[in-house]
Image: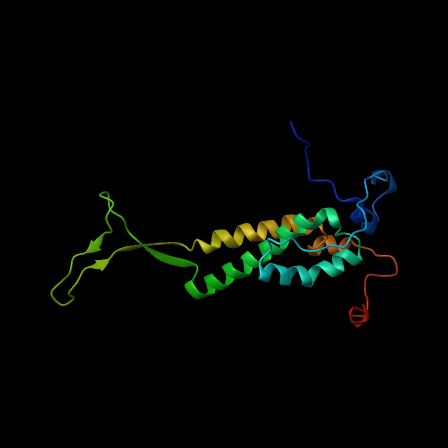
Length: 173
């Protein structure tokens, strides 16, 4: 049987959160300091998300060479979430799908004298994009939280020298 309870918090986050020293793994393996690049399989939109968040995560030491694939999952989920929101806005949260009869054919309402042609019967269901949205949200919360990207994780962070910085510093690098 696997370990119980939530996944352990990464040591870097434990240190940033100010967790007790006896609960921090001081012999955790440390990844080599390498240039961190997004995976080649990321879509253009996901690479944009990567460029938006990766520099800050790298600066705090949370994103390392070993975390590239995990963080790419976050970026990919953000893109899927945005697509789902756009589709839901366009289509609505409830959509009509053709009603299929026992014979496997589409059920049509018989035509009447004043309305020629048969009208396809529909049943109203939750838009399938809702499932995409919910799954992307779950991935963002689960994986983003591991990088300290959720509000509750961020509220617990305490960086040396203060977490606030001048955005103009980005222009100097």
